Amino acid sequence: MNNLEQCLKCNLCTLVCPMMEVNPAYPGPKKAGPDGERYRLKDPAFFDYALKYCLNCKRCEVACPSDVHIGDMIQSARIKYGSQAHIRGRNGLRDWALASTDLVGSVASPIAPVVNGVLKMKPVKAVMHGVLGVHKNRTFPAYSSRKFSSWFRKQDQSGFDKYVSYFHGCYVNYNYPELGKAFVKLMNAAGYGVHKLEKEKCCGVALMSNGFADKARSQGEVNLASMRKAVAAGEQVLTTSSTCTFTMRDEYADVLGLRNEDVRDSLMLATKWLYEKISEGEVKLKFRKDFRMKVVYHTACHMQKMGWQVYSIAMLQMIPGLELTVLDQNCCGIAGTFGFKKENYEWSQEIGGKLFSDIESSGADVVATDCETCKWQIEMSTGKTVLNPVEILAEALEY
Amino acid sequence: MAMKFDVVIIGGGWAGCSAAAQLCDSGLKVAIVSEGLSLSVSGSATPYARLAELQRRGVTVLRGDRAVGALIEDGRVKSVHTRNLGDDALQADRFVLATGKFFSRGLLSDKEHIWEPVFGADVEYDPDRSKWYDPDFNKPQPFMKYGVKTSPDGFVLAGGAVVGNLLAVGEIVAEGYPQSDLGKL
Image (cartoon, rainbow over all chains, first blue to last red; front, top):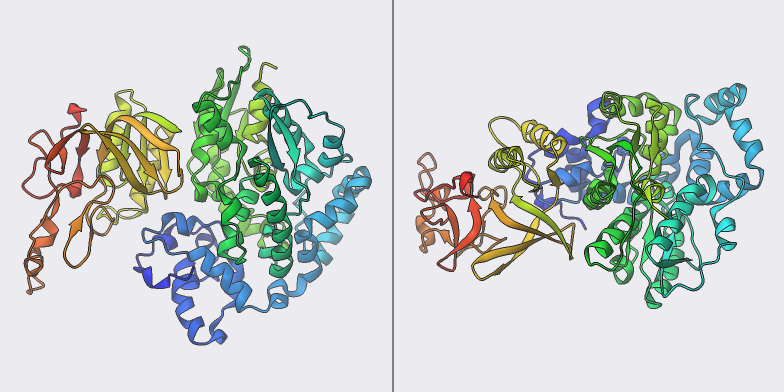
């Protein structure tokens, strides 16, 4: 939706933009969004390639008192006016590889030990840094030799009265099946069986930000078709990643122009679903009495945009013995694939600085967050363990 | 479905944050719905810092969310709905209205009416639109005095009746009407 006329020029978006604080080349959300849009409507030649610096964190939209779709406007302009090849730039191969989470994951998973080992080697990192443009300090999330989907196929999920469908996402499938396993354990404890969606593709967020909007759109269609089947069978579609959820609920319609209103309300994070079921008295969870953990909760940017951190926080607060502090909402700086790119590394770390120091001074054992890329960034930058609230809940279960 | 609190504050500007700080100090479970920010003399960054501090002290901060409606029964607010939480209403024993005036959408207007959008509170204003403003730009503008009506105790009036658990604080209260004393909550 292009509502640039609603902008009052108050500059609150400028105040909260994390990129603007560290990178003077970025014109900022007001200028890149509603101000620039006014020009672009007159003549697409006004499109400014500095819009590629937008992290798509949506903090501008959260701050905007006038509901201007600043972030959507910037994303849409990148797709509509920017040459996709130009946005990919000189590092086209790298950006393609970073964006193709499904393909790379499928190739890497069967030879995970080799890939993980090779990616950690200094000479390989140097080559990736120099030739591909992936910063040498970054460690790729390790690939799992057994995909979540292969593990899940062996699980007996029959015999439940009620079922939910699970959109696991690329990270759970290829890198971190533990989170998916925790989700299944939690759902089973709640009395629900788990179904996988008939077909699942990457939500497309990395494709969109790397200039592959058409591919994102076609993958979106596949996901929506599978979700429709699940919803028609009376199942909610649950997720464990805030960004996948946000992308499929909001970006599909607002940026890619896909029609998702028929499944949108049935798609939600597991913590929101659980909170609602528990409040309605339909689900009861029993937690271990001996569970002890000191946790700080980091609200991922897309989680803040949805406003759903309240559910994850409320769920964590249900665990006796868990001491929780909610951190001030700051961007961790990685913004999906953005921080992996050599040219963005310094900005990425500078943006995350405030959050890292908050975490380090908190004295917590564990950082909880609903976003996997925040997890990589915080683990690399602070050395703390980062867990999804679903994992903490599953661990605390008396089951 | 509902999220339950002792007090829900609508509005995260100066008045709302001050109320939240006072109430959470007295040990209550508080939520604050903070849509956008108030552009105050103290600067735009100040309310952010205050919200962050409230969050550290255990207040539930719904940042960037907006109250879109309320359920009022028997002269009491039962719950408030927000844009982000959809069907999950915020329930509380008591509510505080601190949404400010026109700029922060505490008050909305068209060419004939001025209204308070969340609770439908009674608004004090001149029915004659030509009296809303003074053509002399430099004079005090009458519309700046408009706001919600309150009872002598500072409770909000709606449909002429007192809403017994809804206090109004800050800019939203019409000039000449009593401001709430939070001690009454």
